[in-house]
Amino acid sequence: MSKGKVLVTGGAGFIGAHVALNLLELGYEVVVLDDLSGGFKENIPAGAQFVEGNVLDHCRLERLFRENGFRCVFHLAAYAAEGLSHFIKRFNYNNNVIGSVNLINESVKNNIECFVFTSSIAVYGTNQLPMNEELTPNPEDSYGIAKFCVERELQVSKEMFGLNHIIFRPHNVYGEMQNLGDKYRNVIGIFMNLIMQNQPVPVFGDGEQTRAFSYVRDISPVIAQSIETLACYNQIFNIGADKNYSINQLANLVGKAMGREVKKAHLEPRHEVLHAYSDHRKVKTFFPNAPSTSIEEGIARMAEWAKKTGIRSSKDFAEIELTKNLPPSWSSKHVG
Image (cartoon, rainbow, N blue to C red; front, side, top):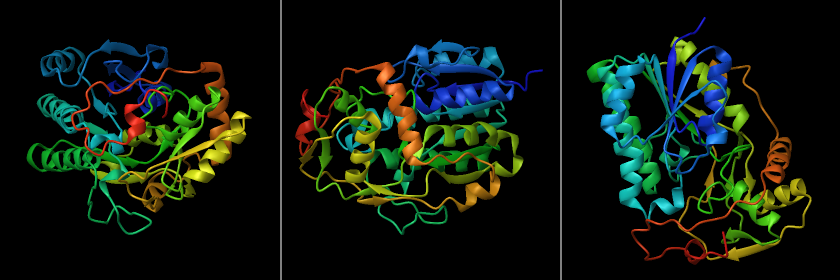
């Protein structure tokens, strides 16, 4: 017996496709909304209904909600390129804020039980480490600002309209079905795609900036299951891996998993938070049995998938709004 119908935006993309699959496994009817700008039809799990569309089309959203009677909404559609977001401000805020507001409006109007939103640790900016949910966000890029804006909209919508929400702040997620052809985001996918082409991997600065890299299959089941625990409602959770690695260490790990020698092309440093990793004690209290995969195992699994998927072409972003201080590699067709 179905547990109800849920909407997954961005369900043809990376994390969204995994969440959609987990929801189907839990017994929900799943409708995937995706414009295929960064995802692929083959990512959509069998059994999910696919609707091609964009969250900016509020008229389409109005019909979609009216016709389906969704129980919950999982909003994973976003353009998640932190560094590039400085240079695509209008695009960033339209897609990551206005699109989210359209979904919030329809959720309020249709009495959605819970709105699950994937935010990001980008909301913290340079902050106390490890970053925990009690810290005051101080985002340093347009992407983080957009995510924090939506978080605040959800909190206000709870107070004003009673719309329940769950906010997850994942970080540096990697794994199968990641878009290997996007040179602006997803560093592990970028590295694998270039290694398969026998090209050097781009490393901004000295490569000693650190991140904790999170395997997608450790993240997505928790996001999917969260609506079944009422205590999760109206909570914020950091979610992801605990151990952090430098970009130099990461490049070596990826090269080993791909079975290739990795060559690094050190580029000019870009404006970014140098060290970012978060505290996960809260999410572990609510989900003590969540899966945990070592970075070696996770990258090995992704490498096997990447080899089967093959090289993806890397395209320049077509809507750059500001070129001042744009890293040269992001305007080149040969690097990144």
